[in-house]
Length: 148
Image 1: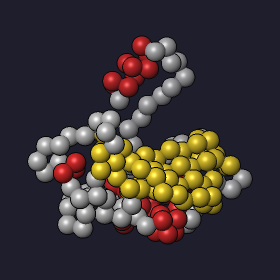
Image 2: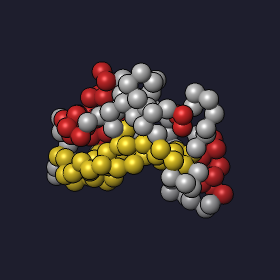
Image 3: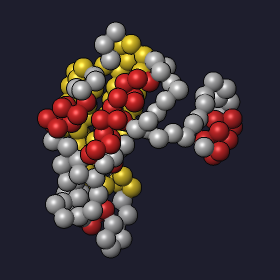
Image 4: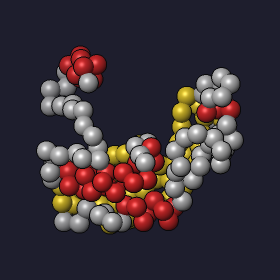
């Protein structure tokens, strides 16, 4: 948080604020955000914590807010490799529709820095290289909105 505050100040950003919170119990921001972006959080949560997170971000969103979630597809690192379990398109849709109106779920690629060390993600099945120093893995981009 301190590094983000310093970086914002160096850039002259005066209306930004930062906070640390448990996103499955995210309180104190009711109806505040017009857009919610999730790039890699939902698929990292334990399955039994996902609905608490979906409810928390819905509560923090203003009426009419947009939601975008970029999440791994099922078992992005292969069946026996450690890592997030990911989603099928239907599982992702079903997880989010408990609170949000889902507009679209489409295939997407998730990118990371290529670290070809032994046992690292780049050496696991399902991981490809893009030729520009990144690894890519299959995923989905979900877009949804909070009803007004």
